[in-house]
Length: 136
Image 1 (cartoon, rainbow, N blue to C red):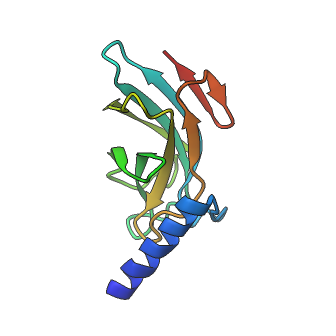
Image 2 (image 1 turned 180 degrees about the horizontal axis):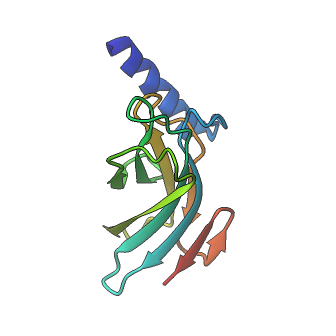
């Protein structure tokens, strides 16, 4: 089990830091993000995820908003498989992004392979970009 965890961690770190990712639906893929800033300054993220969920043994189980150093700013846990709902969108609000941060990455994971699929880099200082839109 430790060997599997270490391999998953190393692959996830490599995929995040180099921009490389697997296009296989064995890995959870973030396909679109809609970010909106609340009046109190916090953010909501409506994130679309695609994965070949196969029941409880293999499903997308979370997605995260991380800064460019990989620090987790928010996480949405997915409590069940979405076998018959692909892609699916879920919301996470009250994400606090420090004033000096202009870009975050939204990435998803599955319970079997961890991270390693496509994430989307969101420039929160813009109004839209490749795979995302922003409203303030």
